[in-house]
Amino acid sequence: MSITITFLDQSGKPVVATAEPGDNLLRVGQAAGLPLEGTCEGQMACSTCHVIVAPEWFDRLPPAAEEEEDMLDFAAGARRTSRLSCQIELAPGMDGLSVTIPAASADARRM
Image (cartoon, helix red, strand yellow):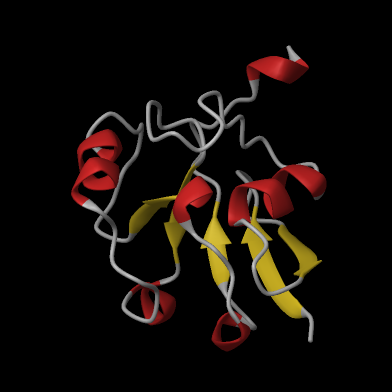
């Protein structure tokens, strides 16, 4: 069963990606060419994979751990529905998930 994820890039343009249950949102976004750096490779030691989850999806995701909440304090443009994409493991019930890449996002791997 595939899961469709819609990323809104920094300009608001939708980028649709397909994933499988168990995939990680960070890796799916990177494979779609989005500027999600993920410097710490999912260790919650940075906020370079910060995304803003659509409000209608936020409460449907598993809650963020305290360590993730702490790291989001350093994320540029963080909002109430911000998450670290490295901490979102995709599940069948997440088909249609929509997230926004913050305008301040930059991927140093591409510079």
